[in-house]
Image (tube, rainbow, N blue to C red; front, top):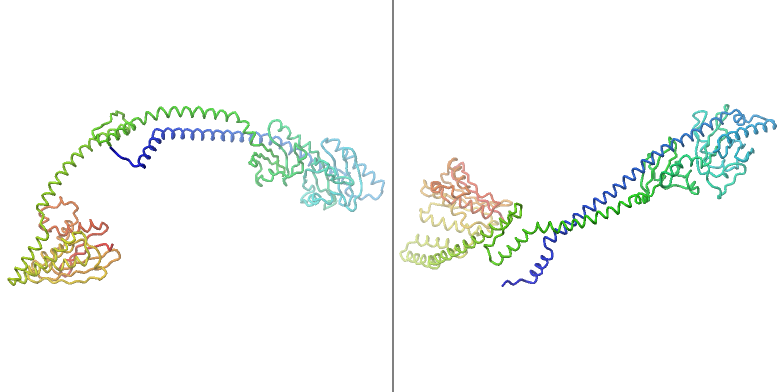
Length: 616
């Protein structure tokens, strides 16, 4: 009976609650919903953009028609003003050379008749005034005419900025540029003019500085007031074809023509937001689409403000259709996911049941799945794994039985270290009794060499211990070959505590004596140097033996660096031994970042071996 902890039981309950089938179904529905929502949103804003663009295009078409009409209207006023300036009677009034009163009265009558004639010919004119700079004022309106002198220039027009603007235009020809201004009241002009806030601002004024043929500077201002409804009629046909508010504003952003007459003279936020270099186009501001068009080369701009809500109303039915499509698609996605995902996850469900049987110890359980997709390959792999586990368990059982037999044999053949040391100690005392000092010292050195191995069988030791092993080993060899081997040390004190592989120097010293001192009666000098580098300590073993040729040195290096023992032949082992390869492999296994060892021949004879041991 298996006992599970509370955390494992809760984990299994949560796993059942969040099954793969449920997660796939939820994921499929969410992905479908996201795709549908994105499609609906893109369609919605796409249609909205199309409607805005169509509205912009249609507005521009009507603006072009109305703009041409307004431009022709301005040119007509300009032509009228030039006709007035060239009229001989107006020129005679500007010269003011008549001294007799009857002549002046007759001249004033002729001027008034001339102005009345223009008022009769152009029904959209509200009034015409001539303001002389000497204070003489003459004018005509639809219901009255007047002539009077204002020598102190107390009329509102003389003190207005409009008057200064008219007189400051460039006098580059006989007809200075005409100046337009809107949103004027009738009380801004005329005899004893008074500004009344109750009067509507329904006048558009065209003014031009005038001079006689015999004057170099302007001597008067010609004022032509046009009723705003004339300008409104030129673009009012747009109102029946397009929704939104349409009006005309001047360069200062002041409304000069509008359906709502109470807004005449007010400032327009939309006009103020129009780019300075924009002749025509559209912008969005305050949930409204602003379509603008500059009339000709003037500073007048036609503006149409269309609320965005009007576009939304046009696609209101489209929203219901999209919601209906979204609901139907959601239901279809839910049914499709329930059926299709169940079919997809059935092999996974079978695999989970098979894994449960494996947990219960039924290793010969297999899955019958003939699908040719990833699940079919997964089921085949599970079947192979099931048979493989069963075979592996049988093999492990056999190996364990063999291990038990081998351990029993090792225990039976194991030599007790105490028995070995007691035997060596007995031989040593026998040599003492027989007064064989060389045997006694050899056995003592051998005991000193073997004692640390039995005491601490670790693979690594300190450099200090390794140097002691080397000393005892050379002592034994000197007793064997006749005290002809000398050893020198050049070791930095800080390196003695570094860790090195045990018995790393013994094979190198043995090679130096057997191969280097073979022809010198096994007599020579071995020098052990230890150099400290930033990341390594270098243990250098130098002998003054006969050395080796370049060819032998190359073969030794190839033999030493061979990573596959099966590639080494018996002839190579007899020629080079296994000591160098063993040292090289042990250094690389214990210290993978170390380059191992390097062998070189000295110019004076002898061999040098460098061992690289990391400081850490």
